[in-house]
Length: 418
Image 1: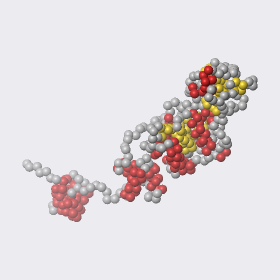
Image 2: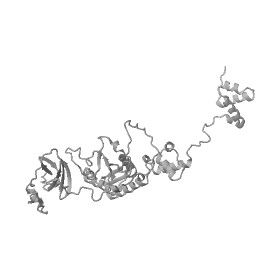
Image 3: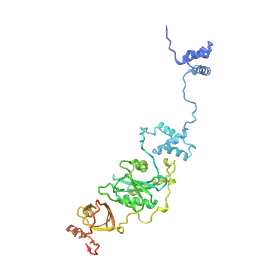
Image 4: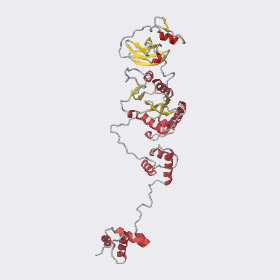
């Protein structure tokens, strides 16, 4: 017995000939070859139309796909993504509609698949969302501001500047983006005060536990300038829990966007050039950029500025001790130390041998030099404070004053001490 191996086309031709030449029924032939009756009918039609070529395998691809993205739309989509690589599917869909390319943009998933086909998306394994993560948002503008400090502003010298940032929690409106040379309490407080002058006073501010925002976690707890501005203007300061960056997630997300679109790979000539570039970017972010969390509205469309909460005058501490406080004088020791009620405090070595004024309220002390607030300190005890005359001028002080102006201070009893 000889076995003959037949190809696919030969088997289909044999089935067709059995129907055409031998007069067998389609049902019999279908059962003999193990296919459906509809398949045999299709072979007969194709053999009659195209002959032997009609029995070869054909593509299963449909002739038309009504829901497929048109080629011109996909081309426009790719062009937008090439120019703006940080735009996601939702933003791209919004742009297609705004620019009149389509009346109804493709879905975000369709755009994502198109970007993958074109190699414009780097596929990464998605992280599972934490089960305890909860999204929250305040109900109206100016109810809460989120504040933080971010670095990454590069200069030609290799030095990096920082930016004090602030976001309105309800509208995502950027109320503060000030470039500073270093993260000091006074620089952060001055930037915060500028935002208050421009937009008004929020009910609350939310920050992390950085020492520029709070003095509660210092070795010697005390009030910093930022806290004092909040206290004097009726603002409630709130702090995140330790190791909980998602609490200030809105301002952290703002940082991510600013790094990707403005700071990454860019070097600014100086602080003024960096501030100008950031101001321009913030203007576009607030007034022209749609925000997905706001249903593609701009932050400016959700933000309102209450005129009755805009303060008059200077918001920063004036430098003069408030009325009714205990005011004492101390001469700074060689190591930058002063002593109050048996406790020692450091005010800085650069103030050695200078006379400073200390205003005391409970356990909080504000240290002034020539009418300028230089430091806020916290006491450990409630021991009574005794006013004493500053220590007599030392030999080093005499040497330091030989070429300078002689300083005079007046004590409570009216006497003058040099």
